[in-house]
Amino acid sequence: MKNICVLVSGGGTNLQAIIDAQKNGEIKGGKITCVISSKEGVYALERAKNAGIPTVVIPRKNYSDSVSYSKAILAELKKQKADLIVLAGFMTILDKCLTSEYPYQIINVHPALIPSFCGEGFYGLKVHEKALEYGVKVSGATIHFVNEQADAGAIILQGTVDIANNETPDSLQKKIMENVEWKLLPKAISLFCEDRISIKDGKAYVDLK
Image 1 (cartoon, rainbow, N blue to C red):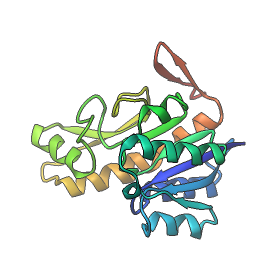
Image 2: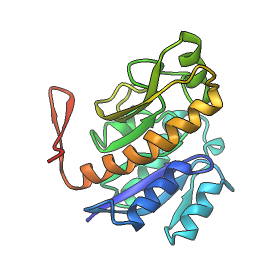
Image 3: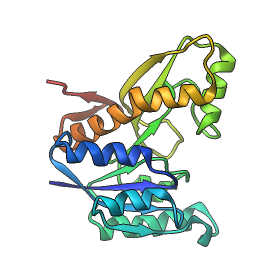
Image 4: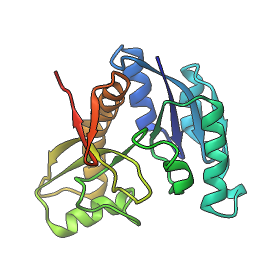
């Protein structure tokens, strides 16, 4: 059984999707053993406590730079014996001192179809604003591994939604969360825990059986 540590910074809607999937038996071969938050008092911590999952708060504001903060997170992950790290609305870029310790063991969800509308500065509603500005007809979300570059790790799963003519950044965000993120993130976690993701030449290949 793999130990899953989930990193959060806010309300925790993606965390809730993972918790619900675990409760429903959709995540096989792994269990959420800890939720780590970069902020105190966020609702994601309540979600974890309500599910009986241990929590740790490591405030980003207490650290002067990304390196020192990443080292603090790394120490906690080692303590928790993390096998898989899931970034679920975690709003801090992690330094390579951490990502290099966990190659192909950190999963993130990005609310667009990478390589479109991704990289530094593309997060939250900004992603959807740019997609609508460009006039794309479909958007979606990407579940990918994390490396030292923002949104540049190997892609695990992607899903799409159609964009309506009257779409707004808020409505698109909600549509992608409900139809793609909350479904594919737990699926990717289970695939990892079941050892059904292989890496070849820097690309992820999924055994969907």
